[in-house]
Length: 254
Ligand code: FPP
Image (cartoon, rainbow, N blue to C red; front, side, top):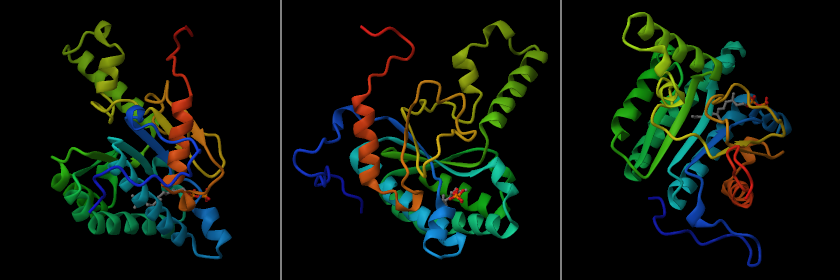
């Protein structure tokens, strides 16, 4: 059972603490560095991905325990199909294993599993495991774990454009009525608020085709820590830094 009470704070006295009243509502993560981690440990690459799944597990618990309502994790991009065949099937195998192993505990802890991306193009076993997990957890409210699977930001935007263009061509939509809210509602993330905080571990400073429309005003936080070494203490560091920043959304500083 996840801890329902606020956790014993592990940060030393005198160190900055997370302000539980100003938590980000939506945290997005690019889970990068699994390959480098495996290499550093002289392990096959799949072990890096496996260790990365453990990091995700820890952060899901942290978000649920702390009260962060949405966590979006970039688990497989549209570009990841270009990886060697055995790595792709290892990743799909891990996804299926994760979904079957975690779903009971996530469900007991009121965590909803959802997904963004062209998920119907995943191998059938992965697609079925995902649909079963989504169905089982669909009424849960405490945390939404949103998995980006076969996800690409440009493809998401293109699909939205096609859908709206199709509706306009069919006379169901006046092009003049297409505003930001309508466009957002045509994306995979319809109904989900934009991320407040985007975390990129493993030292790179790229957004890698992740949530391109949605991160217009998102605070970015990077760290050299490789994803499999990333734990709740790193997320706390990111949140503390996020809480120090002043978000102006393009407006003037008062
Ligand atoms: C990038 O690391 C990571 C991925 C392509 C996959 C992320 C997937 C997981 C963490 C698996 C667990 C997820 C679920 C939902 C079970 P990389 O291999 O590009 O790392 P590198 O840049 O060091 O090579």
